[in-house]
Amino acid sequence: MRRLTLPLFATLMLCTAGLVAAPARAQEPRGATEPADDGAVRCKVYSIAAREAKAPLPKELMEFKDIFSKIPFKAYGSFQLKQSSEVVLTAQKTGKTKLAGNLVMTTKLIEKILEGKNKVRYRIQMQIQKEEPGKTPRTEVLHNMTIKLAAEKPMFVAGPKENDDTLVIGLICK
Image: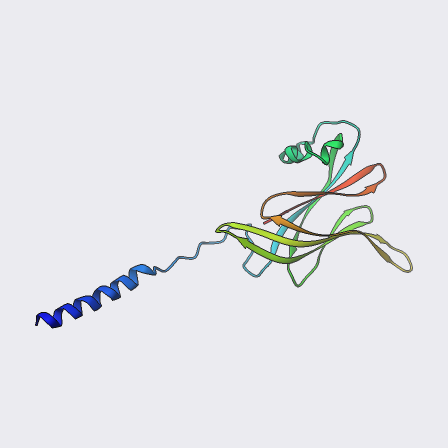
């Protein structure tokens, strides 16, 4: 009887250890601002006019004060938010955002990179284009770049001149 009980006890212990070792993980609920897991990424695009003349930073740009006080943006004396808009990026579809005047920016998500437990980066293709309407509409690419952007971290790029201003484009993705 003793020999039969020991193997039965050992089998029961192994089964119990197997159940304890691999607990099921509950799925965390998504926040309202987090995109669905279909590869889509929500981004906020800022169009900012940078000028040489000194002026205080507007309150709508105060969260970026540290960025604008460093090179290359420290060369400008003032910044004015022209507009901000949201765009949803996917690998299948190119997003288009009007910047200012006849300038538009097209963006496309190339890949989502997971680095570590909670660190996400995005590789995004950006093009700043000048659209000229008319009988034969024309599009001229002014800037073409591929950027690597950390999730929820702002990135700013000095773009083309518009009148006396330099257009600064900002992008924050979640």
